[in-house]
Image 1: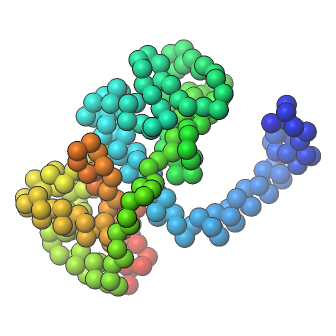
Image 2: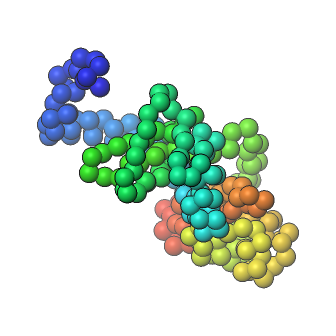
Image 3: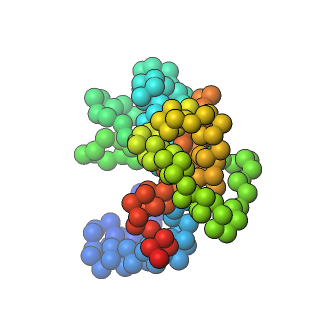
Length: 226
């Protein structure tokens, strides 16, 4: 940035690694996180976890080709070249290095590339925010969570957790030994309670346990401790 714009003194101190300047920046970032992001962090974490699970499932189902062809609308895979919509025209050669794919809740519209001389390049790409889709209706207070205590829904939640890449509705039905419609109904209830996150996966829907769902299974969520 300094090559294009004159930098303030505090910015130069950050670049030089001044401990006081770095500590001050970290304190401001922590205060911002606590005030703005922390109340919504479960949502952020669950969306990113679902995107990671979707990518991992694409790798399992169709390898690198399937992963890269479904990564993001701004990304086009034409082996051996990955084309990314970018503000300016540039080439980045891996030269045998790996490429780290990082889904981001805050990256919007187009991916961003992070480069460091001593590390593999990182491609940060926007996750699907389900824009334009109707939100699930809010659950009645205590209703879905009370129903969740039933044995079948608990089994569905455990089945979804057993697969790190998420489960389709059919896989849930087979694991819990219920009908497809029953598995879909239980998954919908769990999703409305904030314990599962669902996202499209080809012709199927992939169900991924949210941080709240993991905490409930572990018995660690403070709101449930009482």
